[in-house]
Image 1 (spheres, rainbow, N blue to C red):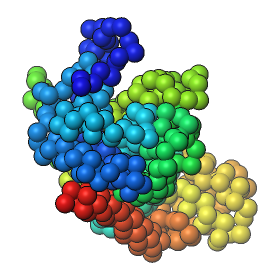
Image 2 (spheres, rainbow, N blue to C red):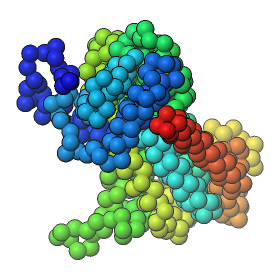
Image 3 (spheres, rainbow, N blue to C red):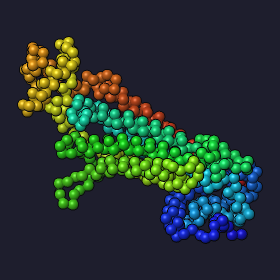
Image 4 (cartoon, rainbow, N blue to C red):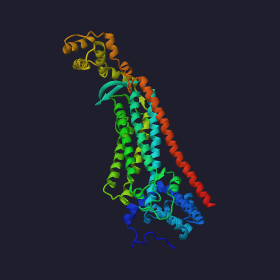
Length: 499
């Protein structure tokens, strides 16, 4: 018997539908999801047999056909793009190998709707795990760089203007904190992805006594989805995943922007490796930090993927339709690709970074970033209100800037002059104390309150970051082991039925 999946329709699909809709999706699903589809079919057949919905010999024949396809007997050239999707291609081939009477039983108790929803989640969890792995590498690289620069003094900035002395290690620990939050968002997204729709049918389940929990376990899911309508109607997990990587990419973009600015000749704080730079076709002196440019720009592609997903999803019925099952999911693959690329580029950049410590320290000494500590010192030594001290130091800075004097050349006389104009009397601050107050290294070390840039605090942050990284990696490995163990169990069940 020849199987015709489009028997309800009076014509085959148009060339436009095939070339513009079916073929791109089938090619992508074959490349990314063929093994997942085979595993889904295997798990479903194993379950049907265990539930006495098909006899063991039929199950064995179907599983044998699936294993033939899996072993290389099926390739891109075998695909029929007019067959609507990858599932119909595979099912048709199974029927050809096992016969319609046997192969035609494989689709009992399910629909393409729940099948494709399951395959998309399986593809997505692999992609999210890859992002999680790469993020762990980025956190590791940033933490190691921070540990090397706990004492590397640099200027901290607000509004892109010199603010207060910190260390490069302190700055990097701040970036790592943001990346740690990204790791928790990715884990949450993975948890919501890893729920099994298979067995939900078209939208109302099935009258056959299937075991959805067994299929869920064999495919490595945490739980089966409890509502069949939601199982096929929902793609909010795509939105959540894209939102998580969009926030991650925002953090990467901001980090990349700082490194990008610091690599300019005007800053000269850092230098990217030659291997991550490009040249000019006309200007022989150029070394362009293009890896950082791509890190910044790729965030835009990920944001676009999120907007595309949300735009496809809104104003659709809460049920199955191609807007939801196909179009809304498509942006996810681009979003994950661009995220993986950006993480690899920024990780490579910071692992090969050259830090110009002397330039950083020199700039912190002469750009008035120590002015806050001067005000704090006036409060401590002369028991004056901070606001009055602030006014005095602001006057000192204003006078110095007007005279073209940098902060490392401020004198006690300049402080007295400002004090007289504000409070009517000189303070008599000693030259030695002023020198200490204006030292950016001492400024940094004295700020030992919780979360401050003092080396003791930064080392504590690094220790906490390292613990988080170890725990995060352990959870990733546990997820991977769960998928591996479920795969081994599925193989075992298939082997038993194939004997």
